[in-house]
Figure 1 (cartoon, rainbow, N blue to C red):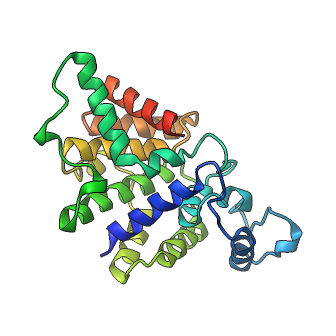
Figure 2: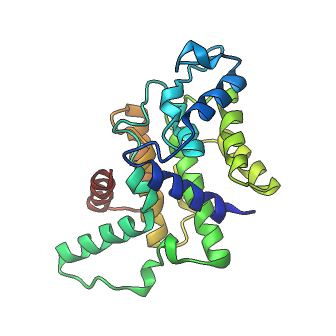
Figure 3: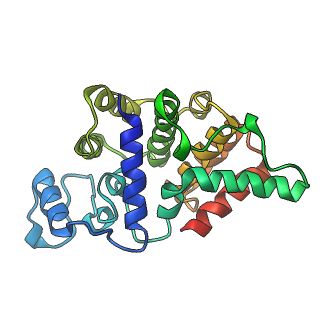
Length: 242
């Protein structure tokens, strides 16, 4: 499985997409989606098939990343819901949140027991953390219950386009259909830093004004044993990163 490669590319897309289209081939994206959905790109930017309700404009923010959360009806990728900067710098921001909380307590800000940031991991540990974050991101994207079978297939196609191997392909398909279970997800966290990163990347793809999505965040924070103060600090870091 090559989860670390996929996560790194999603983070790169987020970095390139923040505040811009990230140099994407917008016409190519529209044409590709039109072919998938049976539409015609000359009909404009809104393409839909059946009840899926895709808004092509909402997918122009970053390839597979845009596809992952673009299935949320009514969401604009250029709006406030998706926090590109938080995805691009998830490890550093989660660490900053911990440091900030420690400083407020007047406690030490260095601890080997906290775990390393995803950006500095390597080998099997990096692969495991990448899977944890991808799983958190997929579950967050599904929290409002609006990813249908067609949208699942499109998301899988986009992940494949990033170079997912067969094992990764099957894993993504499983995650798109698995029950939403905050406790099960939290058990995957390999360290306190991993828990913070999982929560922060969930915040990045969730619209906290949506009651179902806000409820998922609250469940996840509890399952990850994050204090209300830490959860609030992680959300503040995500908002500031934009």
